Image (tube, rainbow, N blue to C red; front, side, top):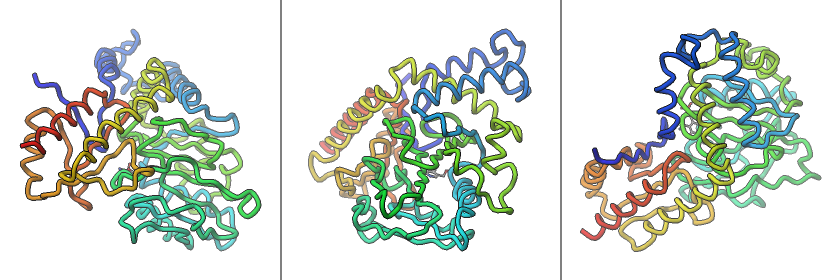
Length: 365
Ligand code: PMP
């Protein structure tokens, strides 16, 4: 069988070892006689799975003790509403600041506007989202409830190289909320620079249906009365994410992914590998003008690499040739067209090399 490499933006490739372990434990988890899917979320078997996943994630991301890790549902788009419902109440007549760097921060702005005033502090829309606007150009509100950023724009392929620098004099109490859906666990981050981090699981964590939320303790309890109890961070935290039935099987798979990450050197080792993978791919795209990526080099995403063929009439034949070689799901997002290669943690360097070989061969032909 042709070796398959899956470049989907999400739901995305998972480590083969994780899928193999899940398959071997599908019918009978550790001699319990039950599939994980059949277990009570409050029983001792699932409790041990849940606890281990939380401990491993805390270790992998070095999450400080004053942050809670919550497993919720509703995905990234769900959090676009859940975050303002939980945080806008920090202020009377709240305003929420945003930096608009692409499609996903754009959706967050639209959704938040249903719950509070929004201020787009900076936007790179006029430049086709080719960069993160320079920090000095951000017009932050003096008394915003929080600042929302999307640290990796999955569609536009724009990634923040670092956490934004905040000025302790002018914005001493401005929590940063970061949508890290498509690059969490791909690089080292300093969690303490953020008030809230959220991520849909279906890229670097596990199956769709699980949403990770990391919240600093002082931000847990500002929800507006309209916030649904099941999405109230404080309620979730007090019940250790078991207020309602959590997505148990997705948590189990996420736990296997965390164990796989630890066994493979943790986040630092992943980051080194991801730098190497991204370099290989961008170098191939930059070699001549047959392909192009429109993002300024210092903001190019290591996870999601959108690119265009100079002659777009070749798109179909490019995709068909890729498919025939086992290089799957390279079609770009419908809103921007072109191609996109998502090269998450579970994509081996061999997959990127196979894509690069194909890029060279196709351009040559
Ligand atoms: N934010 C980002 C950065 C994303 O990439 C996505 C999904 N691709 C979302 C939010 C939305 O996630 P969901 O579909 O899980 O609601």
